[in-house]
Structure formats: structure tokens, C-alpha cells
Length: 239
Image 1 (cartoon, rainbow, N blue to C red):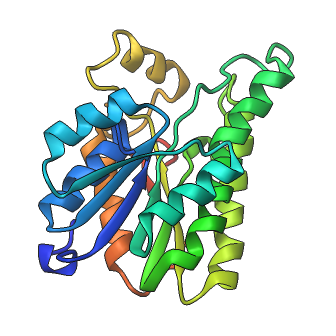
Image 2 (image 1 turned 180 degrees about the horizontal axis):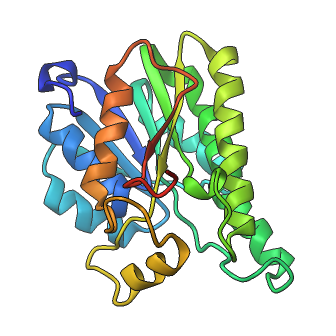
């Protein structure tokens, strides 16, 4: 799925959430393809550790996606760029609907949904011609899992937002990557067994890894005719 590196040479790609997980894998693939990459998050420690691994074509920036002025100032520092990937993963409420504290749900929404909203809103004016924005949702947007009420709502809202602003921001392209169950790095003990209780029959019968999900972002950066799309990478969990 990953396009030829010539498509990314001399491109500037911004990855919010690029210090770890899927975001780090996106940044790594973009660097390997010849891009200049800005990785950003709230954790300076994670950013510095990631930058040491990624090399000299990487710039680090701090940003708090839950704060409007922090986001606006972030893009003023970054300046013009080609593609924005947002891979924010806050602490997500995992209790049943009646058990979740409303404050915790609101905080998660403010980070993942409103964070992506703010980043797209303030970043759009800095995106060059033929550039793009890629959001991140998750398969709970379209399939019900017990304990995922808050996650389902914010993921579905993210996909709906992307479709509307794909029309409003054109020719900037706006898409969403919808990952399935992805293992952590290093792997989390018991996570695979937990996922099997949620989705026992998905065809590939394993958790995904971040690099497999990252390929979808690079595809969407490169494909100049993809906008308003939701790319699902889930090992068949939603079959």
C-alpha cells in the first residue's frame, strides 16, 4: 500500500501524536520515504525519545490539542506544510454507559474529537496545494462493543466531521483512518485475549501492529483523488 518514496521527497508532514504508537509509525514511514516531518504532542519526553530514533529530518513541537491557543500557536511555528495526520489517543473511558463519569467522557471527547476539530480548523490555512488532513477514528464507530459507548460516539463524530469538511475545505483533502484492535509497543499482556472476548471471529485472528495501520495514512497522503473516505484497517473485525 505504501507509495513510492518520490511522492514524498521534499514534502513536509505534520504528525500530531507522533511520539508513540501509530503516529510514530506514520512519522517513521514518512521519514524513510524522504519527507521532512514534524512530530507533536504534549509529552516532551516522548517527542525527544522518538526524535532520537527518527533522525535529522524530524522536528519536534509541543502542542496541547485541548487548548485553542496552543493549537493556533503551534501552526504559526510550523508554517506551511503538505499533510497533517492526527493520531491522538487520550485515556478513553472503558466502563459501561451507566458507570462512566461524565467528566471523564467530556475530557476524552475534548482531546480526541475536539482536538482533531481544532487541529483541522487552525491547520487548514497552512496546508499547501494538493495537501491533506487525515483524522483517526476506530472501528467502534460502526460496531457496538460493550463498554465502548463513549469511544463509539467520538469515533463516529470524527468520521462525520471529516466527510463534511472534505466538502468545505476542498481542494484540501480530508480523510479518516479507522484502525481496528492494535497492540501496544511493547505488547500488553492479556490484550489479545481481551480483544477475542470483544470480537471472537475476525478473520486474521490477531492484533494489528502500528506499522500496518501507518501504511493507510501514507496512501491517503499520496492519493490525490481520495477525500471524504474512511479507510478501515482492522484485520476483518467488522466483517
